[in-house]
Length: 264
Image 1 (cartoon, rainbow, N blue to C red):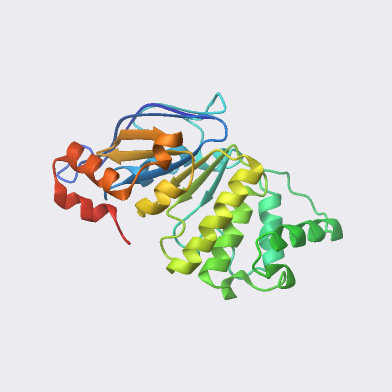
Image 2 (spheres, rainbow, N blue to C red):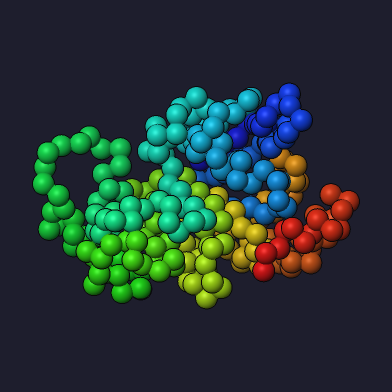
């Protein structure tokens, strides 16, 4: 479902601030893979997601989604293939619009615009049912402004919007990092539920190695713009945080860098 082939990306090339962010990155995700991504600061995790989403062009390599080469497609044209949830709960929604209006925007993404009146009764009932599935009571607050919701509620809405039109690929970019632990756990549970129900191919960046082990069927560790560890299935489920720290220390040769991999 996703292929990254020999991807390179350097920022500020030829200057004193030159930074090689992706260094010959190769990655293949099969249909339905739920991959958690860990690594130290500057490992290239977010750069990889931004490259896939088309936030900036890559210097070299190819990006394919479901067999289609999207390497040169601009960000807005990739939106038909990709759903994304950001770290900041304030991103991904229109704060001054109601919950139902935000969902309607997501439902119409990629569709042609018409002068047809707003949200139909059928659409509204559909949104109500989807909100009820979140278990947060938001189905009774459909006209509430999204900006008045808590961070966790807003992130749950963003997650629903990102998956409303079953994307080829779901990108979760540290989407629980700004939430308190209890709320983060709830959003992660919702994420897993939605991914499994819709059989979504997913990349999830996290700094929490316990979450990286617990969720998904596959885990990759990045270091200096490339993948240094790739584990899945039973081997992944048998992992402990100490195993990941030992692996990172072995590769990086810098035990102090371990501290940067854990935010909790």
